[in-house]
Length: 171
Image 1 (tube, rainbow, N blue to C red):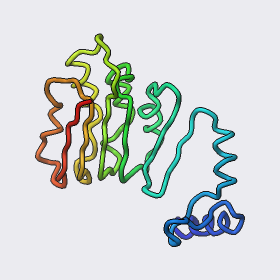
Image 2 (cartoon, rainbow, N blue to C red):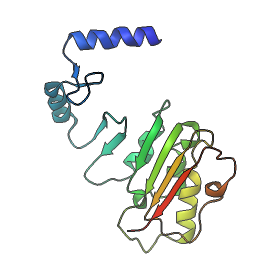
Image 3 (cartoon, rainbow, N blue to C red):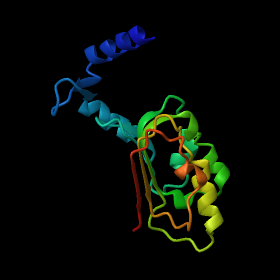
Image 4 (cartoon, one colour):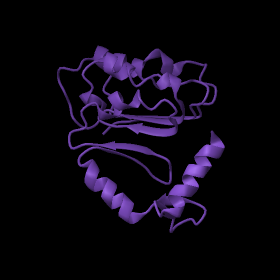
């Protein structure tokens, strides 16, 4: 599989789909013209992987985009930020992200600056509970704008052996 992937990469490189990064010649980026074409075709919704290998989902209103589409990304690993969690309708939507099956080293969960009076302490705790990541790989956990009173049990679970950094930030 790796050899086949390298062959595909070499083919795309020979067709100018990729070009050397201006900041690091050992890295490659999508050619500017290809990037412009892709952005034009994608419209409001796109997925972008930059040099830091951060996954970014964008839409004008961030309505459960991170959550619903994460279930399709079966081999997702590394670092991920999920913004706009205040827009998640219920905990089962968060469950679909299936973060416990993804090998994440850094996870940022951001509820955003919107304040919804209909969201209760139970809502925040249930959504956070369903966003439990894989415990063998997580090193950093950042939780932003969480308006719950207490965290889900997995946050203090001692099975997260590699977890060395944890932040809780409020706006």
